Amino acid sequence: MKSFPNGFLWGAATAAHQIEGNNINSNWWVMEHAENSNMVEPSGDAMDSYHRYPEDMKLLAQAGLNSYRFSIEWARIEPERGFFSRAELDHYRRMVDTARDLGLDPTVTLMHFTVPRWMFDDGFWRADDAADLFARYTEAVLPILDDVTYVCTINEPNIAAMLAGGEDASNLVAFGLPNPDLGVADTLLESHHRSREVLSQLSHVKSGWTVATQAFHSTGEPGADEKLHEYGYPRDDWYLEQSAGDDFVGVQAYTRTFIGPEGPLPVSDEVETTLTGWEFFPDALQMGVRSAWEKSDHTPVIVTENGIATADDTRRIAYTEGALSGLHAAMEDGVEVLGYQHWSALDNYEWASGFRPTFGLIAVDRETFVRTPKPSLAWLGDVAKRGGLA
Ligand code: GCO
Image 1 (cartoon, rainbow, N blue to C red):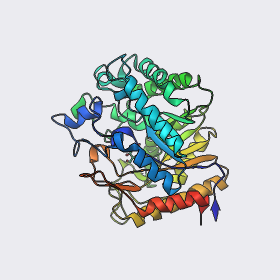
Image 2 (cartoon, rainbow, N blue to C red; image 1 turned 120 degrees about the vertical axis):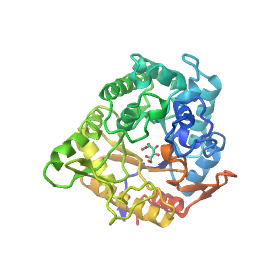
Image 3 (cartoon, helix red, strand yellow; image 1 turned 120 degrees about the horizontal axis):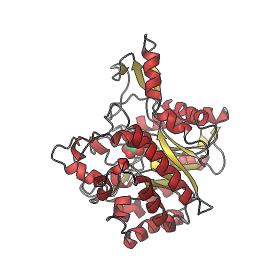
Image 4 (spheres, rainbow, N blue to C red; image 1 turned 30 degrees about the vertical axis):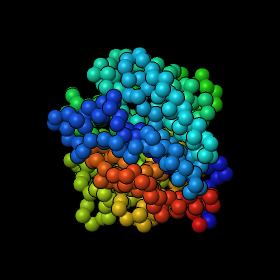
């Protein structure tokens, strides 16, 4: 058996906008409804998890998991600049309490891509006071966090920097912009530091951010290695380096991308692909984890996302088994890993791609919102209960 340490976090992850529904005060809602929107469809009711979170959490706990990563929604908590909604703070407080009552250690993300629409209109991550605003929001949510161990300040700053690259709501191309905005990258880093400083008022909280590790490989052609360097830096590498000194670094890994002399190559026809068109490549996880550990000067890792979009749940199990086996190998080599949180607990709204790419351990009927756990949930729960791969 490939055993994992006692106390290892075994969980699943979600993000507010992707599951809650009716996140109408957020910038994404605006983007989804913009005239030239490039989104496949709007998020609408999503999975109605705003109301159904107790059921979602119960399914995870019943399966045997002991942690749940979810995000709290800035757009709900601060719907107007400087006004903090008591009712929404209470709502998220109840989520934390529910998770605890069910035996799920809550990992809370403060910003998972979405911001209030006023913040977007006032300059988004380009605004001079963006870090002040994020620090003030962090201050406001401290009362939610007094029973939370792990807090992720910002989800995937390396992707968020690209999302902030567009000029207006309609041309904010999700995940598609070629170059990150470096000014935004600095602001995100400053926001992270300011937020971390606020969080340090709670001595029990461990804070970090989560980085999308990209697993770029050079094709080896002339010029490809130089190109590879451009893609590794200042993208994930830089953000991982900046994680040194945090309590943990969240690693999110899914697939790999080959870089040729001209840049990233399309996925080859010869390999198995998933519903997002990505290569089925479970070793992306151990690569991401090993590189995070090295680049961040040995900061403990939490796998905060890893999974695949597929309609064939047997492939999800095969992928996860491969990814966990690689993770175990990295741990045997000395990488300190505190937990594994699968993306995602539920089928959900995959941003610009809409609802078609199904990443969930639990299926959701979009008419009735009825939840149906997939075999992969029971499988991962069994791994958790056993403490390792059989
Ligand atoms: C991201 C986000 C998730 C995605 C997931 C699958 O990595 O983009 O953290 O919100 O849904 O990664 O693409």
